[in-house]
Length: 61
Image 1: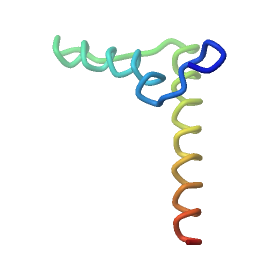
Image 2 (image 1 turned 90 degrees about the vertical axis):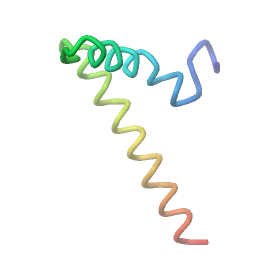
Image 3 (image 1 turned 120 degrees about the horizontal axis):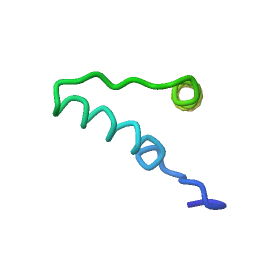
Image 4 (image 1 turned 60 degrees about the vertical axis):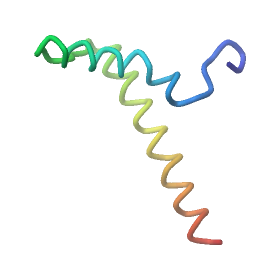
């Protein structure tokens, strides 16, 4: 952790992954309120940016 914040994606995504796994085990859907949806959107945007930047970096090599 850095400054009390998780630094690995698996750690950041852990609560969301567990939510999906529990929903799947019980044949249910995982849903989010507005706050949870905003947090998930922020995580996905950040991951997409990192992936895109890594692809660009590898292309330049």
